[in-house]
Image (cartoon, rainbow, N blue to C red; front, side, top):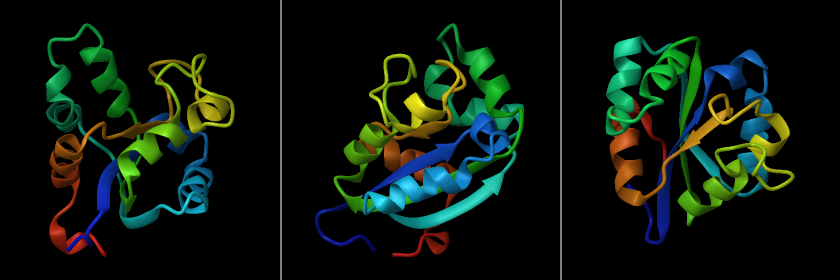
Length: 143
């Protein structure tokens, strides 16, 4: 059960982040910012599972390349917890395009391009709830 004022969000270290061996650095940045990891696991999405997760983007031109990429190797999914954690996580990640991301953000310092940008984070409380349920049961989340 979440405490009053606390939020949860989903974070994914994408296949490029796992390949680059930056899992520990991403986690360190979250924890250094006072964000608590309430659940974490590594898995390898099938193309179909990636399509299910990104179904909201099905009509977008990048859907095929995104789901190919997200099913190309293991990912690390996490439930992050903390005060205003959705906005704080998005600030730590930086802009989707690493060339436009603020210096010091995860994407500015680690990402190669707009498609291979190391991390995913939920953009709103409703999205976070849906995305967390896609990967985790309540039993797997430790508050």
